[in-house]
Length: 633
Image 1 (cartoon, helix red, strand yellow):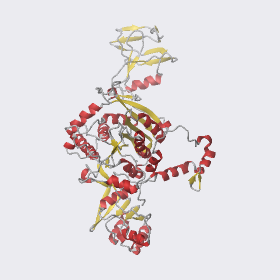
Image 2 (cartoon, rainbow, N blue to C red; image 1 turned 60 degrees about the horizontal axis):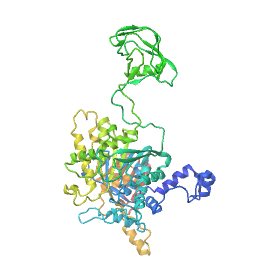
Image 3 (cartoon, one colour; image 1 turned 90 degrees about the horizontal axis):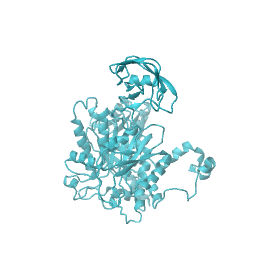
Image 4 (tube, rainbow, N blue to C red; image 1 turned 180 degrees about the vertical axis):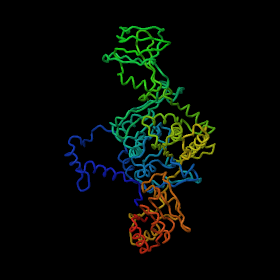
């Protein structure tokens, strides 16, 4: 088993080899070969147009460094663990995104994030200590105070405007996270990021580099407030921005909101050619008094309209077919289709200018102004909603779930996965849960939040929330309680077993790390070999090891596992019995059970054989004879 996350550099090289195999010489990229293959498209001029900042190359190094970290399951902090498909992860999001690469590469439909805006007063993690080793960095991530919470010093560093690398630090923080996020998107997946005017210009250039300028969709303006504060002598800040990119831009039409009130639409169009439409009897309504109307020319100042046959009005309806000749928007087949759909037709006056009124309208392409007119709330709305849930103000400036719901609706997949790796108060989780209730969907969320300590004098701290991630989890639980208590009619068609989530925590690997770079003598090698007689760490539980193997084998975090008891031991079934794991014991009885279950693969810990290679070889041969792939860790 590969004990690290996906190697980003090797992944890129492998994909490039598939697309341009001729660009490689002795397994390395040849710029000269690229020039021959692509000609002037290869630009090596250092003065070309690009976004550059102090620390950019080091930020790419951070991206390319794999992680050995894992995710520890927290069933006791979850809701409906056995059936839930939603995921909450507590941990530093760069490391978590690396861990998720194998399981979710190319599988996420929507990503929405609300990162630090770099206002000069917020704190965030940025990789500014490039001289430190990976172990030192992970140690910092694991540093705890006396109460067991992650320390703020040296980890969440304020990025002040007086800092000489103010913008550079923020860009170095964002780049690797955005690159890893793009990897996780499906080909038609959408990426949304909220931002204000502090970094919107730099972020647009950075996203152009990560996603490609051609995959930019739009910069939406969101009306964040209806009562903006008078903080500036120049203007009141009413809007923030939401940048939107698609992994691979396609011709799909985005959908916005449906027109929810009928309106009268004229059926005439001056630029079209002259055509004939026949409206059926007793279908067209009118305000004309009862009478027989002779054929002839009628029309308006703008349009010539000819009635081709006599008709009659009786009690507000044309009792005979109405056959008109004019410049129409529709053809006869289109008219017949709309009539079948229930579209109402009206010819109000003797001028015979027809109009239509649909019962239901197609969704419109969304405007790039997002406000209450499209059903999206403000910061104030979001704050009141959150305060109503918690009974107190525990989070500043939360995003309204209606914003995420609206954005996700642009290209909705009722079975898609929606990721938020700056989860904050948990608005994305609430949006996904409520969307599913509305349309009986099966969308899943993955929310990631750092266990950043709450301020000591904050309401959140006084209410017992030690970290932001505790607020996120609590909100998800409160929303689930609220939805579970909904009226029966709202839940009539919804599988309530899906109303839950699984909680995980980022943690160092359960397996020891072979340090081949520290050998200075045979004694060093002997010590390392003795340590690795048992490769797993001393206090690692079978459940924790199982989930590390699941994640590092690229299986999703909502995978269903089953314990199968054999005497005093267990084997673990994953992926509906396709993979079996033995982590506690191995015996002849266990082997017979495994063969009877016929999995595709069997995985066990090498330490279970107690250095008896003969027993291991015999087991391998028996499994091989039964067509079962065998791996030992």
